[in-house]
Amino acid sequence: MEKKPEKRGMIDTWIDKHRSIYTAATRHAFRHAFVVSIRDGSVDLSSFRTWLGQDYLFVRGFVPFVASVLIKACKDSGESSDMEVVLGGLASLNDEIEWFKKEGTKWDVDFSTVVPQNANQEYRRFLEALMSSEVKYPVIMTAFWAIEAVYQESFAHCLEDGNKTPVELTGACHRWGNDGFKQYCLSVKNIAERCLENASGEVLVEAEDVLVRVLEHEVAFWEMSRGGQ
Ligand code: HMH
Image (spheres, rainbow, N blue to C red):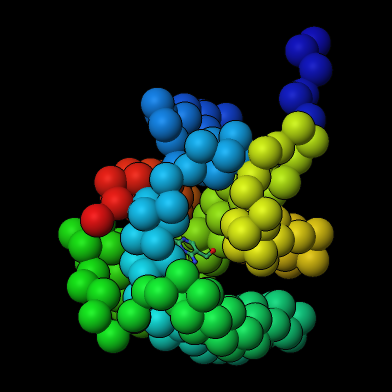
């Protein structure tokens, strides 16, 4: 008799299935890719400044998204610990906004004049659609995990052995590449996996689609940043 394969989470299965887009989002593996260019020290600082201004705007739109995840966690999860995890994420966004403001001063980027580029607007519109009360908890949790995990993996990569990340960019890398953020992403992943275990086939299809679309938006966001301005 054939041995049953070991039980794996849906997210790991999906990441394997969509490996190339996942790698593109986390390594941004194109020529002169943004993340790789931070790690090898060749980053064009105008790209970094573009990224900083655009990501500041993104994060301001991400806050209401996370707030809507929090509301769903309170209403739909039936597990009180979900709420604590998401609340922790929201609290760290508060620090993050302060960090962005300091970096903005340091890099002479005036956020009040930054205009959201197309990739940013499209990503934010996508998040807004996910905030609808119609969107199921496992679907929004999968999206939430992917959004955070891409940044965690990307910036952790810039801190790995052998990196030549310019010292003035290591602050950004530590913000998302640190172990605490990694643990937090794992907690979000565990919540998403638990929800997906009990989800209907229809919800699974939706969650997989949303996961891939997050990865596509992340790739477009890196591409936009590389473009500089
Ligand atoms: C584009 N994705 C983008 N910006 C961020 N700050 C995050 C994810 C947070 O994880």
